[in-house]
Image 1: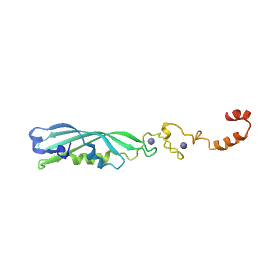
Image 2 (image 1 turned 180 degrees about the vertical axis):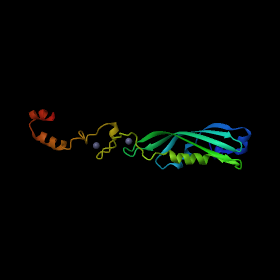
Image 3 (image 1 turned 30 degrees about the vertical axis):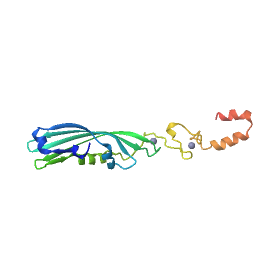
Image 4 (image 1 turned 135 degrees about the horizontal axis):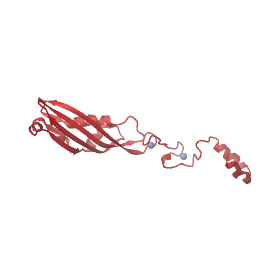
Length: 168
Ligand SMILES: [Zn+2]
Ligand SMILES: [Zn+2]
């Protein structure tokens, strides 16, 4: 795909009584529409022109997969999206530049918040392990701030009472 693939002649569409086409888009072209490190992995556009009395209506649907970096755990994840838009062109137009319209629509496709999951557990602030993949050794009992103190006390206690204390 290059830019010319997305430039349509008004006269030709009118002559043919309309046009319907599906295009796989070159993600490299559109990656500039999103802020790094996000990038498009897949992009497809369904383009439909309908001829009216003295105008042409363009209806467009874009499907795609955006790879986003989770703001909590830093892992990349797939974000599927769909954008729809339409535009009307008057008879005076010679060419219809769909590339430009797609570009603008894709700028809008990026979500404000990027989380791999609503309940992403992020990373351990100490060892940086991704906690979605399991716990690290730094925080066996995250809900017990007294754990370290308790362990120290346990260590000092006799081994017989250790197992009893552990139950609490
Ligand atoms: Zn995450
Ligand atoms: Zn850790």
